[in-house]
Amino acid sequence: MSSLTRRISLMGMQIDHVTEDDVVATIGDALARGEGGWVITPNLQHLRSYSREPALQEFFEQADLVLADGMPLVWASRLKGTPLPARVAGSDLIWSVSEEAARQGRSVLVLGGDRRTGWLAMRNLHERFPGLRIAGMVYPPYGFDSDPYALDRIVETLEEAQPDLVYVGLSFPKQERVIAVLRERFPRTWFLGIGMSIEFVGGKVGRAPRWMQRSGLEWVHRLAHEPRRLSRRYLVQGLPFAARLLAHGAAARFTIEAAHDAVAEVAEAIEPQSAATADSQLA
Image (tube, rainbow, N blue to C red):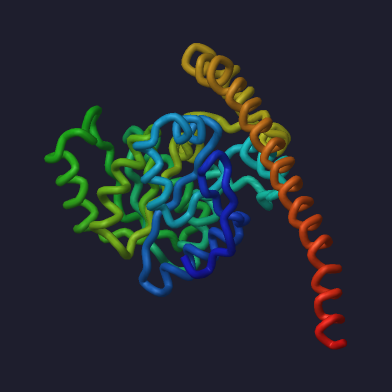
């Protein structure tokens, strides 16, 4: 997107150097021009999968916005010396993008979750932002992503509804596979892969207190509420990978600084020689 500034690299993943306000402005401006896009909000788990499964990397390369939804990614960028300005969480973005969409009188469709939670989420968003138009809700059955007929029915629903925004709340990387298919069919629509954010907005799952979100401890809150489901992801897989990521950031900074020092030394060595050559030519 032309309004973006630059991207920084973490273990090969290119992440946009933007704030939440930048993202909202980018999406709002694109909608005003009749242009769609794709937002991915990777966290530590996504980066781990990205580094291990090359087949997933294409999704992040296709996305228009890749946002750091996880404080470990922000910390690693700082250690590397290429600091991201802030965490941009999908669970916050669903509110701020909806506010901008309501200001423009745009429509939104929810894809994923269960019927009750999706309905409550849309009701809560519409009550907060009355200008937001609800285009519809789709609750695909289990295994739908490998069923071409089920995907065709989703396409038909979107063709009828013509939403400006689609909030896709599926598991990773299922939601990315689905968006990759839909994105090409609907070039004027923005697709936001927001995982379980619909459950937060619908009140099915409570978010951590703000101080835990800001300090990077939101995962502790989730682990305490779902230990059986999340203990392996966070403790067995997440913590060791987080340590590896932070070490990678620190090592990358050391390498970059060493390269800068080497270049400076070469420049200093060349400068006197250049000056001497110039003096001899003048003589």
